[in-house]
Image (cartoon, rainbow, N blue to C red; front, side, top):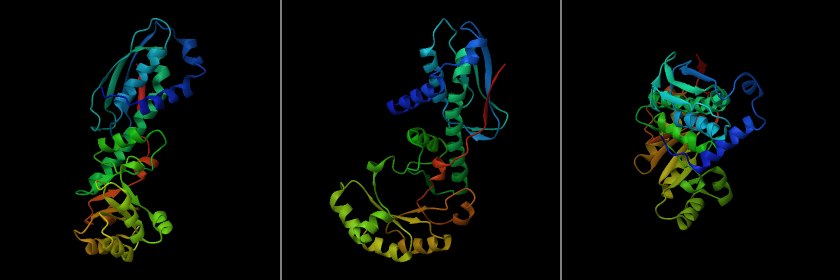
Length: 283
């Protein structure tokens, strides 16, 4: 089983406290610590599985808090994270304390469904843009960044910056405050370690030329129309790494397919993805 980081452990503790701080009157009224159930996780739609170690860990956390002598839950997954699962397939089978299973159900599914949704969306976009690295952004849900980045990797994508210290990236507000692209790049070059590449966000062809003249390492073409992106790529050539951003979605993938970019960043992979449809059924 994968290691659970301190950040994720805190997040899970918060989620369980939020859901169980007042107990579970329904489950405790109907079942005691001797009751045992069996069941399955079933895919209700096609999906890319992600988060089984989190699902299992949440059950283990609830077991560690439980009182009484109960049968521990055992769970066997049929697929690895990153696997394509078809609608109707059994993702996992489980057996153990009915109380534990019912108290874990919603929180465990919330994580599994969200992470699988991120992985599924990433896989769909990666399939539509072959030859281009699909990367996420810092537009992640607070506390979920680590798990969302993992889900993107399971879907065939890559991480951009994990946090502000993960690289240099000069955005429009940096440029405006600094006075120009040239000034912003020079200040970063003077300050940052030589091991960090300098990336800058541009929106016009004039800005592309200015970024090249200032010797930016990575040029992000942000919110440009596809034809303008293609023109920018001709200007840049092999003088800098090209990233495209804005309008990078499954619906608009056909419009940007073939643009010779190294990577395409997509905030929608993490900030507004639809959860995968997974059902937990007790026999």
